[in-house]
Length: 276
Picture 1 (cartoon, one colour):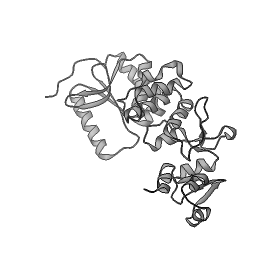
Picture 2 (cartoon, rainbow, N blue to C red):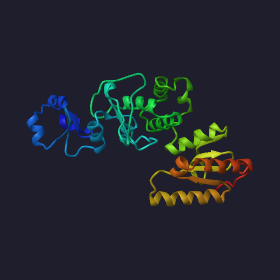
Picture 3 (spheres, one colour):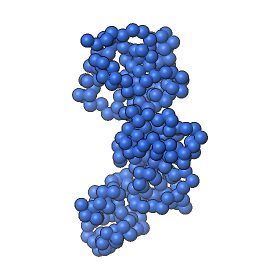
Picture 4 (tube, helix red, strand yellow):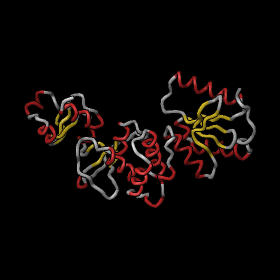
């Protein structure tokens, strides 16, 4: 891959005039290739990522969770997050202005580096959202626990020890949300528990209450496999609650009430049948 291809791949098809000149391109070459001028000193290739184009056109660069989403990190929202220079911070309809806590790193390209993006996320998200992001990055081995502690220490949450609430085994943001909310209610639970005959389940409360967090997308083969697991677990005496993204994000009050009622009746306790 040549220098210009590497530049475009790293920046969503958007580059500054300075970057293009350093890569050996002239203004005439930019025009010949059909590049679009986004604002003074910034250009987009014909195949540029529309989110990056929008961020740069607005006067900033792609930042915060919008960058992390490109690395398949589980993030709490789908808004466009933009980092502006200090003197140019503004709001954009459908977008959010984000920047690291007490820092203003120089712009290196149309897309912030991951370390700047996660520092912005630590200043932009609430406590739960930050743990969701850190869990996902830990699970993908993008960071280590020591990195998570450093990220939290450099954020507005420095005194809340959020890194200690992280779980590298968490496989989705909704699983993280469920875990955090139930533990805030002082409910004892275990995560990613391997049950013989059933497989690994997201959360086990007490002896027999299984809570599974479905992904945002529903794929038929996975859907069928999950329902088969649920049936097997039920036949062994487990009680299975499968929660959708909408359940966790938009209907949590009702979900919490249902779980607490099960626990109040000791429905999470009791013997199960060992699978043969």
